[in-house]
Amino acid sequence: MKTSFPIDESLHIDLRGQAGCEIVGRPGSGKSWLATFILLMAMALGAFPVICDTKRSDFYKLGQMFDSILGKGHVSCVAATPPQVAKELRLLNKLMNDRYEHNNGWGKDWVDFNLRPIVLIFDEFSATMAEADKDTAKEISDYMKQLVFKSRQMGGIYTVLCSQRLNSNVLDVNVSAEFGTRVAMQQLDKISLRLIFPQCDLDAIPFVDNLPGHGLVYSDYFKNPLPQPFVAPDLTRVDVPQVALKLFKSNEINSFKKENYWPF
Ligand SMILES: Nc1ncnc2c1ncn2[C@@H]1O[C@H](COP(=O)(O)OP(=O)(O)OP(=O)(O)O)[C@@H](O)[C@H]1O
Ligand SMILES: [Mg+2]
Image 1: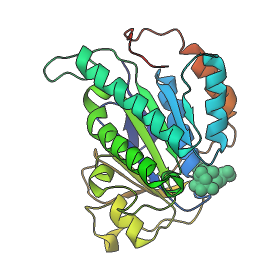
Image 2 (image 1 turned 45 degrees about the vertical axis):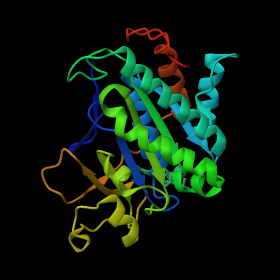
Image 3 (image 1 turned 120 degrees about the horizontal axis):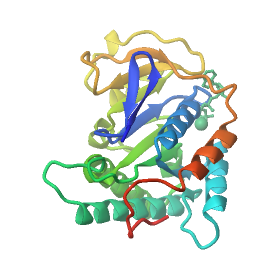
């Protein structure tokens, strides 16, 4: 099973062995475009998409399109309100637990068992948490914790978490650290930088231009603890809904293991 793809010459993303990718940046900095690129590349490897988008932006529309292909009576793969997000994450946690229960082998992971990967796009994480009531916010935060800690081995769920701002009230530092790839789009305030690149000297961080798509990236695969400047792929010429539709449909018939607990 192929599980990785390049973002630029120096950076690749591997759905295997990492909990996901965290992307932080101000409005218009290019978070959603980068998340879209990762979504499409993961779907090209067969991943099933799950979308949490309480801003009801383009991701929500993609999710609705996927739901319409799944048809009536199917569990939705898109969440547009904090309670729906909590429900979607509960579903994914259950899937993860079922996977652990039904597939066991010492030192083996979801790839060894040919389990279908899931790519979870969580856009505007901090805004969702701000909108959620106290209980729902706690539920979301607890499920996120379990997701990032358990997804790597048998979960097979790769999370792309986008957020305008991050601080430890919104996302626990230990949870943030589980994301194998961490991206800061454009220039960012020190609090967000500290959380997203906890191990690095903030004064040594390279300069980036305040242009959409320009940012800093750190990956657990890097030998150097410093984040590196990069430019995210330009999607101007990509018809995203068309490509996503094609990929979603062509993945309906696949050679991944049949799982009778599969929720979607
Ligand atoms: N890699 C890129 N190359 C060229 N242009 C880009 C790139 N990424 C983003 N842009 C441009 O910047 C705009 C905003 O990008 P995007 O919607 O991804 O930002 P965002 O950080 O998600 O903003 P918001 O917080 O408003 O959701 C895009 O519509 C596009 O015009
Ligand atoms: Mg966005």
